[in-house]
Image (cartoon, rainbow, N blue to C red):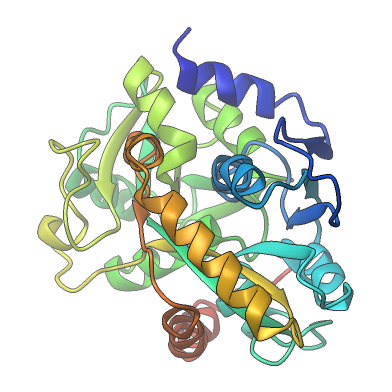
Length: 323
């Protein structure tokens, strides 16, 4: 078993909170990192990869808490309510911070006003995959198969309104496809049923599907980024497969409760950026298909602000609904 797959096996065990093995300072509060999704998904994997190193750098114990529910809104609302003293972070992503405002009329937090952006961690391309037993070998064959059987082919996601749901809706709009969405309670079970043949496809983050593509249990048809993925150089982008301009990467980054002292944000940003530049971390992220983005907090704030209206258009056009 490779280290990557072994790590996932541990994550999939499903502990809702885990203390990472890092140094404990003689004084200082435990750093709490909220992951608003179940263990095993891309958000969880990235939070643990960075959190481990961050605890060492700060000399604090780091506790990862998985708080899933309502497309990430449950955990995000808890993070927004936390004490703004630099002891709580949330691994936010495209869903919680950009898509949810269009999905939930009464969202219990404001992605702009409720948080202080700390660090943009990474961009993660989505990979369109089918099971190894599928006869479909390319995006062209996939769209042709769906168009030949409108409404009969299915795709899975980690839940209504999840990044995988929205990404496939974007592809459906561009390619004029009609498929049935099968939402799951988390990315891991949605992938398991795809490999088992219960659904036909999924279009989700690279960290979750890459091990299964490498093992031969899933077949990659296309990637969502504007450029090919270094981890899968033979797999074309959606854009070069007939849909110019298609770009639908997931993105991830840490936010803190609004009002967190600027000095705490600055220090956390500096330490996280140093971690992203470490050779072993860069190698690990590349293996996971993630592209590190060491930038100041302002860059992450600007990303969130411009992504909210972009995905609101996709949600409206696709008539995407939550549970």
